[in-house]
Image (tube, rainbow, N blue to C red; front, top):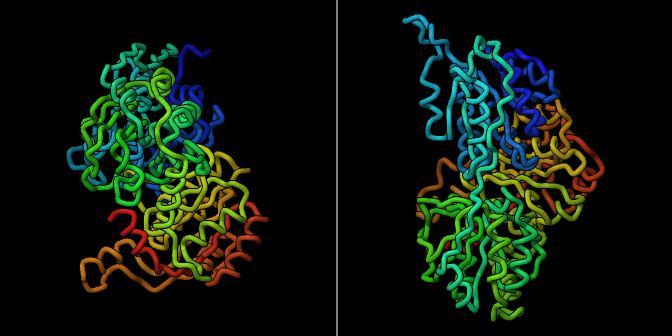
Length: 534
């Protein structure tokens, strides 16, 4: 081990030691070049991306699915400001991330203003912590910062680094931070036990925190003991398989799921983060038991009892207090069928969002999927059958458009054989279609399916519901197959069921980046939205 080391080398070695495999970004001419050089020396791959926001999304998703931490780097000024949507995803979707940007020297002349703004202040609403590593112990500062990103709720930390600091020689002290932040004590409130003992018809709701500690096995054991209706948030799809007899649907805080909850006598929230719910008041006057990683100060409901702390440990200890419910299997089955029926499109031979999703799963061998924000999201989450955690990648806390394509690229790079399908609307795709060039450059095994209806359909529905003139929500449909072909992707443009199935068959026999431009019939979105949210 070297006694002396550059700060950039210290950073790279530590990231390698904690499992970082890839870094995504758009570099500038300052410290990002020092970091790329240091990463290469320890076999961390750097992936050049076309836009900074997409780079940060890719990094965040890669960190999530590899159960490590995402790493992205950008240049100063416009590079950092372009990254903000990705940073907001990391923050609101609870994804651990380190963002490096070039910085400005403290010795700037008084007249220098070009590209200069307060970068720390720009990042302050999103980042959990900040450093420029200009202190007496930069190794300790850096490693503690990384640890902070991995303290729930997960999120981004920001390092503003100038080249001269990256090149500074420091002693290699090999400082190791304490990464175990769990509470070793276990105190079970009498209220928790009382709620569980009194309940005859509980409902369980699973949220994104179950992904952080992979609680699937314990959660499944609890559900099997209780035999009660169970719902998952969008992010928690796959924590228990969609085919599980007790899983009745998706919980958003909206209307569709209410049928399975209104007759219950206890709502058990397991790993639910309030950032996952839609902007509507809590609709239930039913006791709530909240079991979560952290105490969320802002919540939709004031629980009757809380069990806060390391989720996997607490669930293991509390599972013995759950009892078999009085729910009948026929009731649970009816809930499942009724909730799903509210999302089904009219029965015809049209190429609609439901058939697009179901056929895509039929003709592909269990890929992971990523889903963009938009009206198509309802069908993609409802009709795609998830088997495991992270089978579905979605931005729920931020709910941003332009997520599906970069997330799919990152996912495919993490697991090339499994591959990834990106379900995206035409609006979201147009925000990031340049990343097809990234997919081609790294031969990412992705299939992009574009729901092409020439509109911001979700916003269009809301505009019509207010009896406003249809304006500002539509555009002429583009030929995305030709766009993809220009980037070097195999592509198809389809307008009916038969041509779509043929495209899926051809696409399933290929690897690498592919795209199907589906001219979709949007009829049914309005009723879906009404059923889901009221």
